[in-house]
Image (cartoon, rainbow, N blue to C red; front, side, top):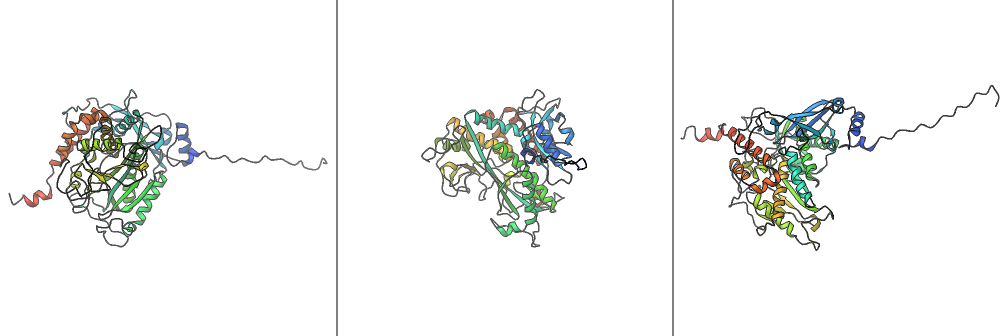
Length: 477
């Protein structure tokens, strides 16, 4: 090579840096380092730190993402978890005493729930938080911790509960004035939706664009819908979720409720999870499918090795028959909830059980032995999912521990004559307070707090004069 020949430059091949899997994860990371990378990759500006209150309403704080990752201490007043649905506070009594200092509770983000908020215009993320006292001990009376305590009682015995919720809800026209009844919305046909559309594909198609948004919002948050159907009511839909861990499934119901409401608002209507929103239409339920597996073997303990029903299966049903009436206030938490629980309706008012019998409170669907499960058909969709799951699993576990035998299964309609559940909220509260067996699983501080809130809500309701009273009492008595 001559001196005039330019020297050939050798360049090293560039290596493209691979994006770590946790950064691409739609839902959840393992540690705070991964949080920072996850947020940076998405250019997230704000974080919603949320937690469910006793009603299942999202409470919490919003902050810039940089502050969230800078080891900032988050706190909420304890009063947030002692507030009625109308924003009032209960009176002391019946074992409940309002804390005089109203001290702070610390929010601890559960990083496995981190995901985006797909309906926000600015890049925003959300994370569900647990509550601890200033000394780091779990707060016994907050809903997520109540469910964790019940699940821990199973784990202590080498068992793992598995659940699958089904949530019904109505779409209704916007209703800014509560004095007017709710009415069904207008679908793509230009006509208001009528009732009697159970499993109608045409009924679902009336709201194609809204349902597409529900699916897109859910997918963006890493939430998986199993199926979506049109129920019997006018513009009443149902979403079924895949089975799994109770806390994870309660989180999903909590997030789905927010998601469905936001999707409906985008299409100029409301989505409501009231138990009985429209007079003359069916109520909305949150049916809970439950099975229990052995943690070591992974085997469903509701079935023996030969496929027959196990004693655990029967005792689980026996526990539910004995304790569910006492826990009804956690399945039917408002005065409106009891409008759904009426005779000759699709919602049960009994504590019977049967095979594939939808008139019973506890239905055993037809299945293979490995999938044997019990469906609790009593909860309404207005129930806090954490508390409904906690109560249902606690009732069943009590039956297993105390070997409670159930009644014989029934094969006929049993939802007409005999009513085996409390007919109203205040009766349900009194039964709830007196069940000492449930207290072992749910905790005394939760039960006294929750009962006080429900008593206060009942008294607030009693201050309202209804149209029925004006119609029939105004000029007749």
